[in-house]
Figure 1: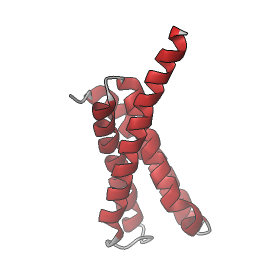
Figure 2: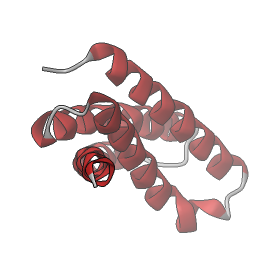
Figure 3: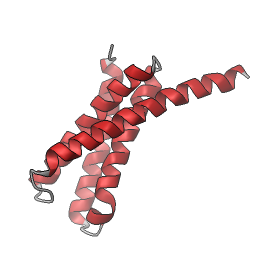
Length: 123
């Protein structure tokens, strides 16, 4: 049901981008209140979108893989942010939950993109 090769690539992209965002927010404190939460959600959504676009096998599978890749990137982001002392342990379940939902929504949009491209090619 889940293609592990595609999932690993989407998770790698999400994790690398989340690490870059968390480290930038740690060293530039001005980014924390303005960009950190939105950026984490955006990266989780992009990871889900990338998974679903590569998989192209339906909305449910795209949303499932997108949610997994979003959750994996969020676990790394919130964990590193906690280790650096930027966020307390209290934000861990909230951050993972929100990024899982955002990754699943990104997976839905990725599958929608696949269907839209197929429709455009057929015209």
